[in-house]
Amino acid sequence: MAIDEQLADRVRDALFARGIEWEERRMFGALIFLVGGSILMGVRGGGGLLVRVDPQEGERLLADAGRYYARVADMGGRGMGPSWLDVSPDAVEDETGLAHWIEACLRRAP
Image (cartoon, rainbow, N blue to C red; front, side, top):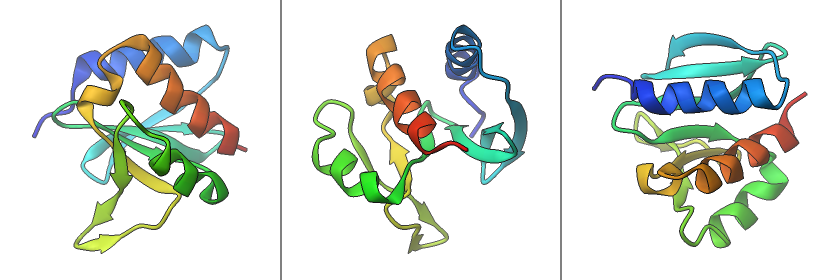
């Protein structure tokens, strides 16, 4: 499935607006955004995100997700633990939802 280019542009705009420098690479079936050489998040095909959050915060983010629905990311049939989450396309359809997940990722970033 092709990367959601509109969502990728929204992530770029959000990072730029925060004054954050990033790199982009394609891996894990996503367009990955790296900050300081570490994975911040990725835009998946179909409009969802793969996010990397502080493992201490991951469980709380899942429990409190509400309309920002997410689940533990799955890679090849294995759960990736509380720091890697798959975020539903519905959770980032507006700027508030996207900002919620970007901020969660930035709290973990180097």
